[in-house]
Image (cartoon, rainbow, N blue to C red; front, side, top):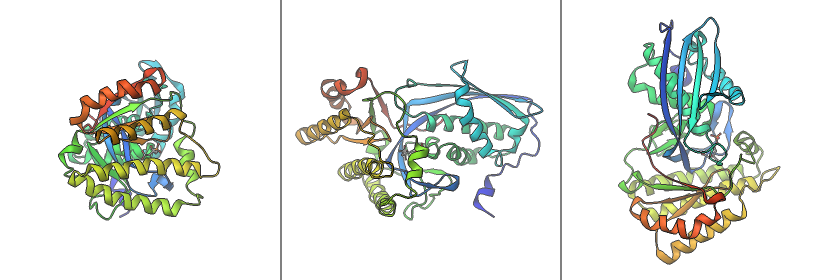
Length: 353
Ligand code: PMV
């Protein structure tokens, strides 16, 4: 059997007239980056991330039996038509795996804990919350066992936005096959087993140096990897970084963690700078902040490091034990580089609830 077939729902008839469920799903920050994909959201290389906690989406889903499938999207109770095409596309992609959806009108009321224009992508948390709601309906309809729900939710979320697959569980999750991670799969994410204590409570302060939408959508970014002159070297580097990071995460080797994570962030941006067309997604403040972090690390020997998403904002990563010191550093030296002094203190969390 094709591996995907295992995810086709066993529900024959949808017996519930009306069902309502609410889920909260966090964003995540990749340590080894997913950048480049094949058809059906199959990643070109494995990735691994910290599941966050404070930055999350809450979605209330109302399913009502109807003669034809329909969807309505609200943002904080108000109609939000511009969100609908992405949701409709997602529901189309997962219909094969959840045919019971054909029998429902769905109303989705969603909200984020982070401001809309803050530069934090809501697709990972949003798709994860939506997938959890759908799998919960499937479970109520008797189509899936409780123990299988997280894996199916991750499988569905992946079809909405690749990185969303990593927002179902926590605190550390990998997605994409890797020979050192036995349970790993290209189809869904899996929880990273037995990380060292220090990494279970790692902190992430998101420094918003530039608000506003991303300059390059991830769809365009992934596509640019197809003909990228350095793609083979990049995919190989990601494999090697995964091996080293797996070992660092198990042993609690913070030094090695810092080296790999910063290299990954810069490699991701290097790929964008060398694609055709090319992009610079950092802002001058991004580089200022990176320089400050390096100076502070060297001067104080505090194990802080940074990572970047496909944008200008900086994620400052540090162990929980350093929290007080690092918060003072942020207030004194980094806050002034943030747009309107805006940042979010976040930390590793357990995933969707
Ligand atoms: O899930 P997507 O298609 O939005 O891609 C996410 C890509 C990065 O955020 C840049 C890296 C990652 O692994 O999360």
